[in-house]
Length: 234
Image (cartoon, rainbow, N blue to C red; front, side):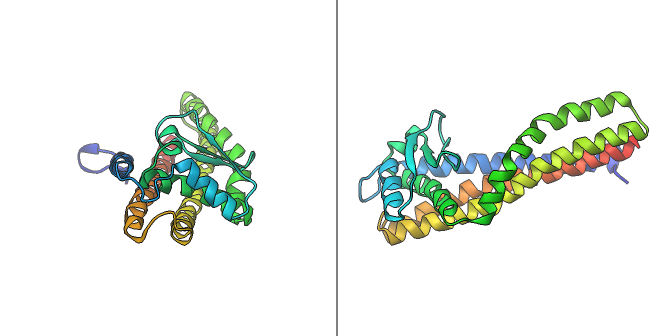
């Protein structure tokens, strides 16, 4: 039975809980970044400089560019082998800036070492991107069909496409956690941060990782909700 007290759909409650967790995670990562962006790193180097040091010491054929996006728009592009850092990270000389820059280099190291989850995520991205942009329109088409086998089939196609986007989010989890692990090891081994600074770096990277966990939980809750809607339309 899908309804609880007063006919309230319990799957709505799951979505609301997942949404609250997502909002908390987003707030927490911004809070951690802002906090440790005010803590200068002992070496006084910028995020861009730290990224280039790690790239050189790991013998990577990777460039470092300034990203056009705003805060926390940092990413590694495996197609062009480029680490792109937001202005706050590229120019920042804080513990937070070094942590984020090192995390993105962690992805470059994954790429160089043939880390399978990253390779799979990269190959799967075009499919997941198309599915994520299209499933809503197909689902709405199913609503127009009303009930019956035709609507059920259309809903199933839409749900499968939504699940493809969710699978991409789940694949992202080990990729992000592993990149943070590599970043912390690199910052320590290469002497970019002192032992008293690693705690702050770990806090920044952990809070960032939680946003991916929250997104995956949100996706799972929505998938259950979509399955419930399809069941009622059968």
